[in-house]
Length: 359
Image (cartoon, rainbow, N blue to C red):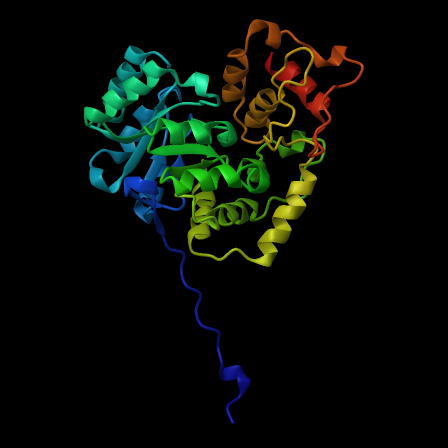
């Protein structure tokens, strides 16, 4: 007989990069990509590249993001990096000029994906914008084209009917995926559209959670569990969490090779309940209900940029893009709120905070 003390568990496999195919583009992208954001941290981005992460997302309207990223990738093998960036414009000439500027800032001859930024209604993608994107693709300066959006339910049929876009980048996470997104995601995937999931860990990181009414007691491995939950869906090509530190990067990296476990499910459930009063799930059930015309989902999303992402700058800039009559509304003037959130968000309290902080 051999003593049980002589038996040792098999060594744990080190985390590894796992690549997925992004729709019909054929691009092989790491399941965990990198949202460069407004202020990239060069040493963290460089470490991600060294680890094998190959998908990087930025935008023309993210300040110096493209220029900072260019310094990190200079001298690296271009065909090993999948670069996506975006234009905030709607006019044909402006979109084409944006691409040329992005190429100059990035120091590259082409981008792999050229997006229109933040398009949540078909009206926000006019014919001349589609024409501009096709010109960009035909020129070879953009291999594939797409757009980012927060409401794929409104945009899925448009994408499929148009037949012009190769990919779509959209919100998809534990709090806002599932019943609110799965039908649209499946429809797009079945049509061969590549899907990039964004906002995958926003609700689970929350640099300013201490400012919320009901902050989670601990964050722990919430982001890791959140990305694992997203990657369970085979329709998702890649994810673009923003990462500011190497430990954060290394934790998120593990999501590609670790299975989604019951402990992850329990953690996400607990955190979801704790942030319920504060975090908008972007179900859009409240759309058009405010008698004063406040776009509730959008304003709460802008507030989340500050409260959950620690990005006051992005929150303020987004709020300032609203019409003046909307920015001037004060929800504290209402004795009660017309919005009763089906997910339990304290809508009036959150809107009042947004107006005091951002207006």
